[in-house]
Image 1 (cartoon, rainbow, N blue to C red):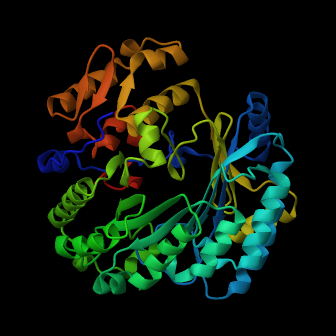
Image 2: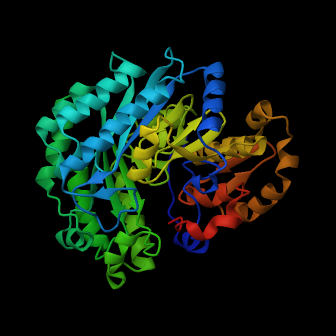
Amino acid sequence: MDQSLTFDLDLINRYNKVGPRYTSYPTALELHDNFAATEYRQQIQNSNTKGGPLSLYFHIPFCDTVCFFCACNKIITKNRKHAKPYLNNLLKEIEMQAQFFDDSRKVNQLHWGGGTPTFLNFSQMQQLMNTTRQFFNLHEDDSGEYSIEVDPRETNDNTVEQLRELGFNRISLGLQDFNPAVQKAVNRLQSEEQTFGVLEAARKYGFRSTSVDLIYGLPLQTVESFSATLDKVLAVSPDRFSIFNYAHMPTKFKTQRQIKEIELPSAEEKLDILQMIGHRLLAAGYVYIGMDHFAKPDDELAIAQREGKLYRNFQGYSTHSDCDLIGMGATSIGRVGDSYSQNVKTIDEYDHLINQGTLPVVKGLILTDDDKLRNQVITQLICHFSLKFSVIECDFPITFSRYFADELQRLQQMEKDGLLQLTEHGISVLPAGRLLIRNICMVFDRYLTQKSQQFSKVI
């Protein structure tokens, strides 16, 4: 597979509009409150009938300090005691969820996110993992893909050793930027020593994958300053990079109101930064996976993409398309059977439902046949930059060219612009179209016009 990338400034400027990130289709905005615990349990029954492995996601919402750019569901507190009642409820949810799932189903993927999962102390993390092992069928031979997001300011050599002892074998480090002025502007002061100490410890204790998260478009960033950050990170050679576009939406995310808009880089400067990122990482031997993600050619994601096995879910790119995803904790989202579901958003609501013995699912969506069809089309495009009509026609009783006649007509302009190539057999996204893959997927999104104002720009 050709995993190259072409940066075409003119195309990016013309196509840079708002759109979903497609961690799901339909997106989470389509979830509704006519779906709750009863519907969720029915979907679990359907899932058990089908069988197959599971993926577990646990949301730990606490952070010690607020990062002004953050759009995650989090609770800012320095009081570690707040974690205890939440953890107790999470342990109860694990037991509640597990009673509905066939206990023979292996957990091939597990992820702790947040917030800051390492806000929990080791005893609490151990309790969470032990309870998970008690009620779900985890791998004992380190063959599962068990990952955790960490804030290096909340993590040290001893913490990393403990995480490995608990069974984690993949780690993602939040960084964003090393420039002191940028760090001050977003209220995230973080040293190279803290960050690289965690990376070195992860390698020492046998983590199989290391990833570093960066953000471009933050206040006071320039091409030169962000290039200096890349110099430092490339020198330690992580397995993966996640380099996100900062979406400034202060009316939606209150903490972003602390950012001075006058200090944000201009649209032109932001694109220059992106172009520099692409050139630097490709020159360093990384391949573009898609949607802000780069990986070494021998990384599992890059291999899965070349083999046509890459998948995308609410945690991003994955190699486990066969797993139903169970989300646990406040705000967490899952996909079980033919449905998406989301738990209640506040920890007070979560506490109330858990202590009533009720699954905390508050809304969801049962996928229609059209949803499942379009989901597969969008997943193939966003993961593999190509689509064979015959593959879709084998799985669904349609003739692709007839069912998607309007969409194929709309793609013709993108073909003229050099984003993709259309044939009677399928769609191939060209290197110039890969940064704009969201635009291509949006053509197949039948919900988009109703919710476009709630998304960020594609670049």
